[in-house]
Length: 169
Image (tube, rainbow, N blue to C red; front, side, top):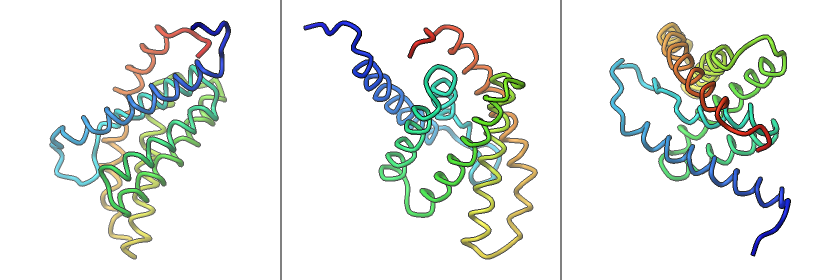
């Protein structure tokens, strides 16, 4: 049976696809070795899905996908602390990316890099609160560099994906 112009059903299907893809990318990322020796350094592949959703769906759709992904990954692969780090990083980076995206002054690479760096700032802030030490600020230069490099990669990939997707997701 076919439902003509079933936009709600189409949107729910896109939600499911995006959440599933972000979940799989998160799992794949956990399998990749980290060569920096610094805890918390990742490629940020799941941000690829969030960026594409931000550029091709509504902001609230992208937020929903991001939050559900964080919850599912936290429940499946994480613990309470990793969930807090992910939630803080995910929400703060999302807010930064939305502000830059709406300004129309940044392309996907700039939005992605800013999101990656913001994610690292939020995670360091949460870690400093939990561990009650400012010594973690010494990680910040490495995390800023890794967030920038990962942001460039994810920004380029998301820009290419966005160009190939229809506008009315």
